[in-house]
Length: 514
Image (tube, rainbow, N blue to C red):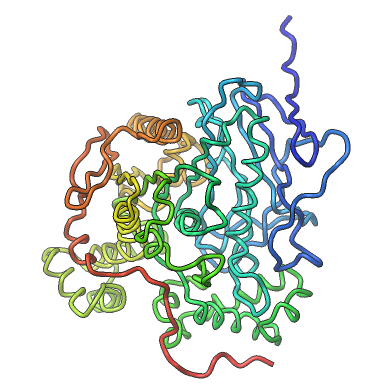
């Protein structure tokens, strides 16, 4: 009779934890890396976790941070419990006792900077860990808790949560079989935007040697814009936008105030411009201290040139939002014209899109410019900025289309996440791939998983790095191939655009607060 696997135990800097064995994998969940950011620590930087006596059971995910309920499709889960221990890490390790330490892959989730949690089938790290890596996921603050800009409060608290999680990895991951000198951060959407910020942050220097940024958003706020959003959130509570006034507010009440702002955000377009039209009230803030400036500008100056970067996007990013809103094929010419006039770069951008795509219908034109503004061009420009600053950058594009909705999703936003993790059942994977994913989905997933783990292991994903004038790109299709950057028409249209910090649109009086 086979003896049951002994529950793995690891000593961390705060105390011992006991995980579980699952299919030959040691799994630890819900390990605190910082104290609950409530009470005296509300709207404060993360503070180190308090030590505990004995052995702590690490078998359940920690509670999710307060989540926006106003996002529509993609709303975050609402915790039923009362625990405020949001800041926790989870670890999957093939061999905690490994003497030859394994590369470490640390995931940062997306969610429009409004929602996100490490829990759920999509982010289960077992399949990636089986490829020979220690996989770490963690929770961090989002929305007003993480990115709200208030007088007296340290900015970019979500980014500081991420730094604290990476410091936990540095100090503890060897006990789980990982190599603290071979840490790769990888993330998608808002998680990729956070990675772009981490690359530019002095406080993150030395905490990772490689980074994978999947579908990087281009929104970074100036302090003035962020403060105006923060003042609007505080005004919903009848309070001034200061730490002293807002720290006593219950986190979910602060979330509800931010959701009220989100609900009326299009009415603020005269002041907030594109972020109002795109429903993006929060983003990293180029405050000059935590985040010195726009990551594209900072990387171009050589910051993090020693970090190897892989960055890319999906071919049809915006089709997810068009299909899920029921607008696919129903965009009018007038709507497309309005979107082009708002989001295409420069005075001639809208005309350039029409000239480059003369036969495109309104839905296609709108999807193209929104895919470019939201994710495709920020991703390309991040790779180019890193290469210009002396760093090594690899480009990729996911072009394999999801089969669901009769193929209408295409290679849409978020499709890369289950493919990279190798989790094709449940969550967004089922939405895009169906209950029984086709063989091609498994093949694309295998190719992406191999590339991501090879990059984490030794810095070479299997194709040549991006160089000015060449821009070789790995295209993940049913059969992967490498070509010059495939979205050349968009690249040319956006070639002179600068992804600098976004400013207030009008020099008017700030939002009135009591």
